[in-house]
Each structure stands twice: as structure tokens, then as C-alpha cells.
Image (tube, rainbow, N blue to C red):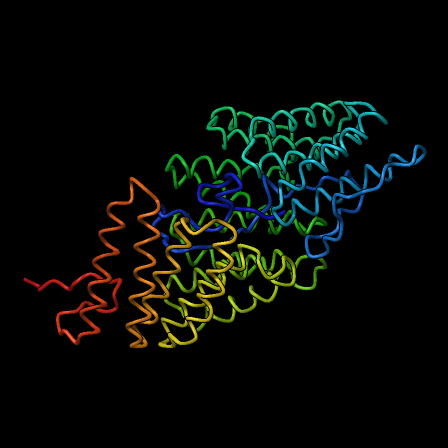
Length: 434
């Protein structure tokens, strides 16, 4: 269940798509990691549910036979986990609640069976932005694992709880929770490394970059030295580390770690969704750092894997198409970019609506591409759509509306052959040196 967003872990409407503009990254990116760490709802030694690529369950289960409630409860839980894996949290939640009801009736509220379901419930609540409810469920699981003496699982749950507290703005509580994990966990354990990653996130948000880097170095040393049996968990840790380096504008280190993660996942079964997400992020960073020729293969690989896993309309796929369109613009192939901007627009509009900033940005990219092709009529039509979209957003969009009108005027001047036209249309005039 891989999700990431602007300031770490946010709600459904903000999941994972764009690095925050406050980080000076601009543009858009994709979800890259599970919430809050790599959650494995199944207990020690049990196989995990099917990956998102194989979601085949739905909510219309028949009534439970009286003698087989566990089978039905497991089916509900597996379906909920699969829906959460493709970020359909609204569909996951009712299935998860049904699974929890069955587990509690059969084994009791504080049972290990109920705890497995609650871990999926934490993901669903968090995906819907219901973080207090997620934290309540997390605490119930923590109490059960503490009672059972499952120290490793307890540490992971406490790290998840710390991540939720970060979401809720309770960074001091989160830090105290992480210190508990570090005190209990073995010095060379994965749990301790994951706690350092979460601590680095807090320090990074407080602009304590040097302290954050030190935490990341400790985590990397531990993870590099171990041969983990949990591929997804370690891949999630490496990816989160890479994104923290990215947030500190250390793009080369971020790219290096993503390449390492892809190599780590090579040959692993059921990891296509993770490989696709990482490839998309790498393609974006390479595009951002002007290595266009390198970015295109990663974006194309991401599109193939994300489409196979999530279907043709997943929002992450929309951003990969958008970035590929931008890459073709940079390569001087605006005709090809139009195709990818069109695909991106259909997906992003369906996911977030026509007033979302990324939906409008794709219209602007399309206007620019038509302008580069010399198709000024189409360019002006799309620029007018940008204006209409911003005007429909209501108060607070005055600056964007003025800028969109300015760009429309520049395209119009270019169409008239004016030598004073600024082109491409999304650039500002070049001022004289003196």
C-alpha cells in the first residue's frame, strides 16, 4: 500500500502525487511508499494479501454460513486490503469494518485476529483523512501486541503511531514514541532503522537538516548491512529515505537510492506497483534536473507497470503521462506531447476535478505545446480554458487569472507575428542587463 505526499503523509485528496512547491521542486510526482511504514496486516509467518495488481474481490459477498465465519471474515479483510492497496479507501473501509465485526464476535475485541484487521483499518482511516480514528485503532493493536510480547511487531506499530502523530501535529509525542522503539529494539534491527527514518522526517520538518541527515545515515548503515526477508518493508524504507533527501534538494543522493531500490526489487514477485512508482519518481527527478534523455525510459517503464497494476485511469498514471509530455516538449517534439497531455488530462480530471491545480496546469502545458507547433488557434483555445478554470475557482485566484490573461495576450501577439511577443507563452520577458 504505497502512498506519499507533499509533507509526508496526508489525506486522500492530497495523496502522493506532487512534491510540495514549498520544497522548490515544482511539477508533479507520484506515490512512493506505504503508510505509515510498510504495513503488513498479517501476523508473523503468515503470507500477505494479494498485491494491488491482482485485486479481484468486491463487496457483494453472500451471507456467511453459520459454520464458516472465519472464511468470510478473511475474505472481507483481504478485499479491504486490496482496495486500500489501490487507494480506494472508501471501498476498503466498510469491508474492513465487516471483517472486524466478525473477528470480534469470534475471537474477542482484544484478539490477535482482530488486531490484523485493525491494521488494515488504520490504513483506510488514514487514507480518508480520519487520522484520530486511525490512531485509536493503532493504539488498540499496540496494546494487543504488547500483551502478546511481540516486540518486533510492537515496534512497527509504534512507528506507525508516531507517523500518525506527525500527521496530527504532535511531533513531540511522536519523537517520544520513536525513542521508546529505539530503546527496546536491537541496535542492528530493521525496526530501529525505520524509527530513525521517521525521526529524520520530524527533524526535516523542523528544518534541522544536519540532524535529519545523520538519522538517515544511521538508518542506511543498518539496512545496507542486513539481508531482510521483508522485501517490501526495506524497499519502503529506502524509498522514504530517498524522498527525504529529495525534500532537502539532494537530488543525486535521492536518485542513487531509488536506483538501489529498483535493483533490490529486481526479480521480486508482486512488486510491480512499487517498481512503477519508483520509476515514475526517478523520471520526474531526471526531468527536473534536465536529464531528459534519461528521464523518458523511466517514465515509459512507470506507465507500463502502473497501468498493469492499477488500470488505465489511476491518478498516478496521469502524472506519469504529464511528465512524459513535458519531456517531449523539452526534446522539441510538441506533437508527441499533445497526446500525453490529453491522456493525463482525462485521468487527472476524473480523479480530482477540473478545478484542481494540476488539471489546470495540464491545460496550460497543452496551450504551450500548441503554441510551439505554431497552432495558435488551438493554443488560444486552451489558454482560454485555463482562464475559465481559474475564474470558476472563485476568490483567491486573482493572480492566476491575471497571469493566464497575460499569457493569452502573448499567444495572440505571436499569432499576429509581433516581434515583441514573449515565447514560449509561459515565460516572462527577458530584462535588459542594465
